[in-house]
Image (cartoon, rainbow over all chains, first blue to last red; front, side, top):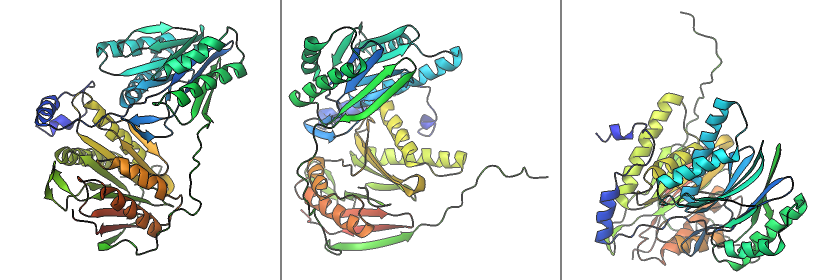
Length: 273
Length: 191
């Protein structure tokens, strides 16, 4: 019975362990915290397309788990999505919709539209009534022009010329509200996005480290990973720690030599019977 | 922790129920294939169940594809298996380490619902993770040879678990290079 449960499942979530987990929590076992993204994510529409920006800190409670994670996810060659909230949810939901968009592209033979991605995301999130905690800023350029949307964990969406999400959204929105104007050029757009993310990085505790930027225009997407590094590490010891060999006390050692594996390659002639 | 064409994966050896110690030789780092190891921290029963499930899936993969799984693929598999139980998770945080294409070291860790966190230097998990972050951050150097890597990993592990009541009782360190696997049991404080 346990064996058959592990065969390829039909999709969706598996709720087998819920009852056991509820009992364990009653007995006092605390569920380990989930990796959250903290985050400042922003997007804005400029004259030729869309610019998306994100910080790169992933937190686990008050501890920084990852100093340089990627929050701008690929959806389609012309559509990217920034994610805030529970890290596993944003990754899973964006991967899933990205695969669905690819299948849709094969079926229709056309470039994906941003509203397609939007509808797929909002219907999935609404189905789970907000328990899939993913807050997203979706942006892209398709045949109908540049689009920017925000998606909330419960499934509501907004269509906006500039948007911010995440714990640092207020800091970033203050920068946008003071400096945004219609018809920005590419350089002005990137500068404004980095200024907004920097606002989040320095003023919000849940956001930090570096700035990632993604510029999407008709026919071209540029992902500027680590576009700005305003927080370099300054306390590196020049000598570092150096441990002499044999400093650690070892109780037992076992060395196993690895056998060379023979790789079977395709391409040989068919066997003659 | 990543070294020069090699990696190290290490764990402590205590198995306990809150403050009572049940065993001092509990294995938490498991081999998936010669160049891929997974360490599972958290609830011991979930660690063992998850390990058995993963070995099962890897063996099926080996039968179908006639080769071992690449570490990146395996990390995606673990992430999918954990996310499947998003609303009733395994109480387990894995640390995955392997040698990929051209024996490039690959490490990653995940939270209990499968959020992958790749790193180029080191990854940590468990009750002592906060101390481990600090110790590894200061002791890590890029491109360490296997001997130096062993010393660094052991010292970082021992230093961190000594500050954690729930972990310790020795350390179990694996150093994997393209040609051999060195498995050592490190002496630690038994308190």
